[in-house]
Structure formats: structure tokens, C-alpha cells
Length: 205
Image (cartoon, rainbow, N blue to C red; front, side, top):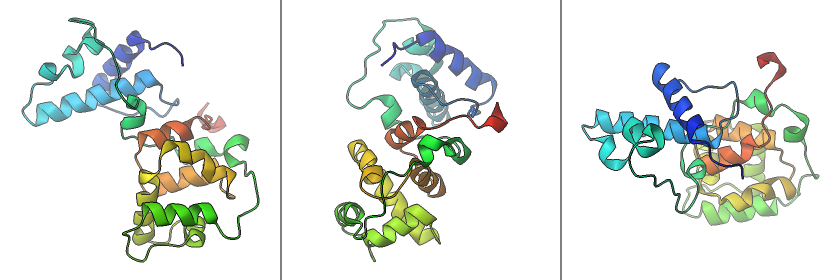
């Protein structure tokens, strides 16, 4: 993993401050972008709730943004870009050969999705079958109930399972990204994984 650039975090925090938190869609967010966004959002949320961000080393007075105080940049557990809630890139960023690639024919039994639904949607009323989940991921959802169940599944999956969605059934990165965007799934680990396949559209160049 490339070294972490504190100056880039600070530059992005300043941009967010100038542009009132506007999320940039001109590039795939870097680790530095996401750390800056996390600090900017948390600082504003704490101020709104009458709390002092500086006491929690958050925002413009934190060491990571201000460079003042005791350096203690250390991440415990999952990386922030996995823990933080943010959208994947817009769908047109996934309209490329790599993201559209399908590795195999559909599994007639949709065994992986059947297993996932049984495991992650165990208490769900009218739990979908693997075949029904495949249809929702492949063709899109028809109503809010379907969006709820797809959202529940994608939010609950472990990151190590994501590649299996491609390898064991006829789903592409584009299908998974479309489902995440359509169902408003803001899970950092999933967005980070999907964004590896995002390519800036020519119309945005």
C-alpha cells in the first residue's frame, strides 16, 4: 500500500471547507480524501451537537489536519476507508471492459446466493431465494421492499466474500455497483472494493 500523505489529507480538508463539504466526482477517492472527508463530517456533526471536536482529536484542530500536537496517527482494526460510510463512484464509471466482465454462465441453482440469503437474511420475512436475489442483482429491483432486502444483504457481507459474487455466478462489477447505488448501500469496504474497477468516463475527461 502506498505511504500515507498527510499533506494531501490537509489539502482535501481545506477544499471541503471552502466548498462546504462538496464531494468531488472528478477522481476515485484516495485514502487521504476519505480521511479528510471523515474529519470534516465528524467535526461539523460534533459542532452541531454542541460538542468540542478538538477534545476528541477530530477536525481542523486534530493532529492529522493541523499538524500540531502529539503525532499519533495509528489505525486499529479495519482501515478507515473500510469503516467509513460512503457511496461507490457513479455508475458510468463502471461502464468499462473490466467492470462489465462476466466470468461464467449463470449457476442454475444460484447456490452461493442461496447460501448468502439463508445466512445473512435468516430472520427476513419472505426471504428471497438465490434465484430471486440473482434476478434483483442482475436486472435491478422492482420496489422498495426489494431494495431493502438487497441493501440488507450487501451491507452484511464480509469483504472477502465480494469476489465470490463474480466467480461463482454470472455477475459483473457493474451489476454489483448498480445494486449498491440503486439500494443506497453506503458501506466503505464495498465501495473501496468496487472503486478499484472504476474508470473515469471519457465524457468527464
